[in-house]
Image 1 (tube, one colour):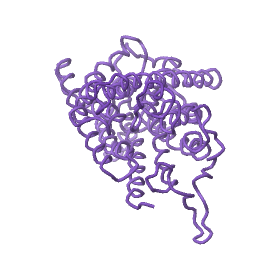
Image 2 (cartoon, rainbow, N blue to C red):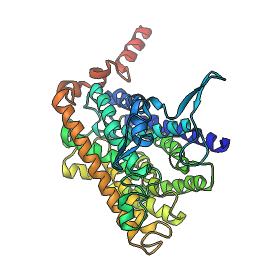
Image 3 (tube, helix red, strand yellow):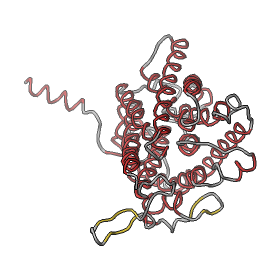
Image 4 (cartoon, helix red, strand yellow):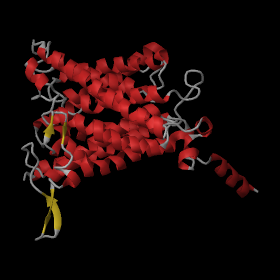
Length: 432
């Protein structure tokens, strides 16, 4: 066992875990005050339900089980983590059954821990699109089904030598290895496509497009963005699976791209509206983080900043499309994660060192990147549509209109985030 790699991967797992609370604050600040607790709870459910599903069969489907058609692993091999955990009779403690399969000499138990945090953050991203109107109970069931039938198979296809991997049939046929370093397809395109499908099924919030729906706590949004940037070092640098130079470079390329994206979004916003907004800065940060995710290890510092800048501009414009096209993606999951993830995945085909069209002179890398992005969109769209329609026709997605107008926090959680009336009343009593 390499203790340095082990320590780094455990640290990375903790950093990626922090990203889901970061998303909770990022999204929670963007919704209205009457829905903030529900928004935080949706992220909490993403953590808890995913952890249970991953322990039962998610890990096995993604990484442990024998591959079935290059699409998913069998759920039995790693059921309840039996392939990775053993009880040591000598120490009377549970420990790892062996080392991770990637050859970087850290325990298999650490690999399980790192990978579950990716599943958590991916499903948490979706909830931003459906804010202020869905039942908590339906969301919990959706998380269990989606991690089982969408996320775990997608991780298998891309990261476990499956259909969309560097060694898969698509890469072999084209003659170029598909590349997704830390989740352009598995995480961001996947989550954004799922978000779009659910939004189209459940419909718009009352008042969408006809009345202003403003963030209730912009400092929350900024806090969430900074937590995401911090956690993303585990997300990208941790995807080197070792404490090595690739991890160090991924840390730096992530920072450079994110900074460029924040600035590009801000300049775009200044030209369009005359202001550099805090919401824009936070959104630009996330757009840059998303875009560099698939490419953090294979693009030069210059191209990393170019990818970030392009994503900052494109995502800024993309977030306005929902008003023109009429779909209520509440917190711009499609505009930021979908467009950002697609941008980063495809631009590897241009800027990937020694492989991209501009950095390597070969069209095949671009072709394979476009194809795996489209395949990820198709798979996510079809699977999510089946799950979402089934839930809509059985238990239903939405709270009642009266509950939505009155505030989903009271309807679903039975409490408020801010008791302004109670505070005012207590002050008056003290004055009297």
